[in-house]
Image (tube, rainbow, N blue to C red; front, side):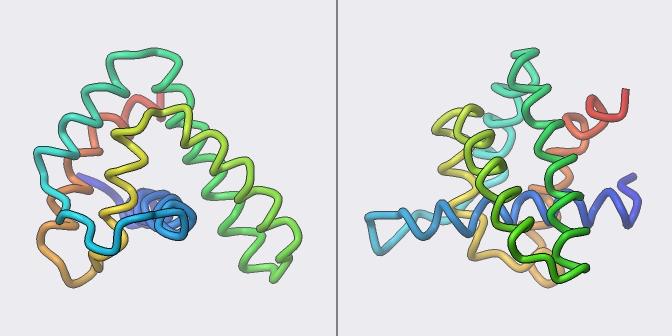
Length: 129
């Protein structure tokens, strides 16, 4: 079971990652995301120690971004966001594509968003070791 704080971190990562990627999208209609897409991405990341560590580093950065945002330190938010974007690209095109398509989901209202977040739980547990 994901705790509220962990859920917020997951949602923050998903939303922060989706915003810059969406801005770069070339096609106006992006296919809807699926739970299967998320499972493939989790398998790719969890099967590679370097990618798993990068994913965990994204968790840390998302928390730092959230803290900077709460302090209204937009300069630090921008700096951390640039680091975040660079790191997420190293997770591969499948991850970037998934994040792009997740933008359209509201994690608080969309059942699919909750299902996708649950797919990331085993990967998130690797970050707490």
